[in-house]
Image (cartoon, rainbow, N blue to C red; front, top):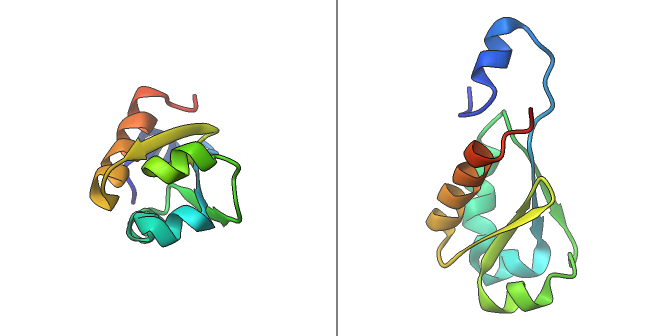
Length: 93
């Protein structure tokens, strides 16, 4: 089980997974490892898109779009940490 929505799963409540989106161009810049790590979490819906039109951010750092908000980092490991931190600070429900 992943890190999120554990209480809802235990209560038997149907839940919506957080959505983590990646830009294919940023994957080539280094966020691929973060995508692969986050895909292991069954409580996340990880999606790869073509260009997400975040070119300024993409040129400067690794990033993912988490429930519609950009999360950035310098390394893939830091990106994974920042995604989980963002989800903890901004729960869906």
